Image 1 (cartoon, helix red, strand yellow):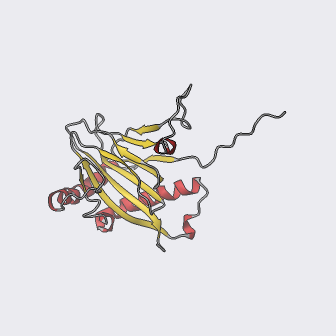
Image 2: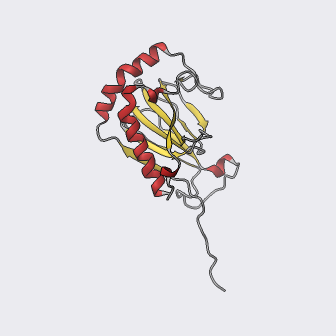
Image 3: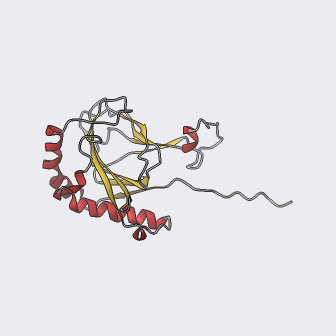
Length: 203
């Protein structure tokens, strides 16, 4: 009798990279982001229980303003690298940024678990991320289906979820159907990130 063959199917992947000059990005974006927080009403997703400041529903095309040009190029380049690692040819689809919105977490804020369906990829760029602040959490899809079993040893395959501790200038890229959120922000300094969703230009 031969040993059973086990094949790992459709693994969840996340890519993490760092902008080569995050301080310059911060200096370029700071005036515009400050203006957004002062003039744009907060519009988080309806299903988020915490009233965190977000332009998800009120200003979700921030990437179309000139100060974002350089960051857009970086985001798209990293998304292309992520897709190539999965042997996906995005050049055949004419991919581009669909939306970009700002999330600001103050002390006590959090963002509930959610996904960004209807696009291929999500990229999150961390403008400010205090070391004692909020961390990003990603759920194992099995957990979302109610399949939670005890394990002898936790591995990336069987873990119920993972946490990503961000730093300023970090970028994380993942497929948009992945459920993610942000834990309670405990720092007195704000946590600021930009969410980019990337899809097919042909819509």
